Length: 246
Figure (cartoon, rainbow, N blue to C red):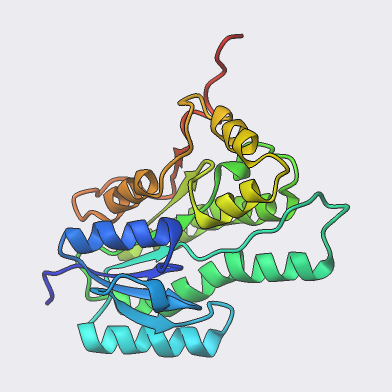
């Protein structure tokens, strides 16, 4: 039985996913990155070009990892997409693409990985939700709905698989300094003011960093973290919990 942790991270080539991969590798974990474009992934990670909307590709890649490593200990369902706008702006294609990637993609990956966790002494799944699941944010209707669904899915998965010893939790990042957020900022007429506005939404006065989120993910994957499942961990600089100056 392997004593080295074996973890798959989806969307692990950039942003939060890349920070998670780096932290896990630093801890001596074997990491497989599943990404539509894994070219920029950490050189010490196994890389697989996988679109999590493709069930056959997911099953094949997960089977390859499990066969090579003799099982899987952890899964980080980080891959996701977003779109801007209200329900009045979103097209059917917007809804189908975001939900298929963020929600069904999480379910596809979990369905493929869970059977290979049987040999693990401490199987863990971490799903990536968002603070927008619990806080109304303008112009994020489709994205928020998908992230709320992930939070509910996490609780259901935790209940379904706790008897097998699989702990399932989710992380809810606030506005995080990623390339996607940077594109939103750069698209504004005044990017400097837009960055300040994003930062000011969080009581800490700064954007969350990918490393902030990665630290929480690593904790939830830790074999020593044994009594928490079905929970949501908010990493948002106090955005959803604090009201200052009232």
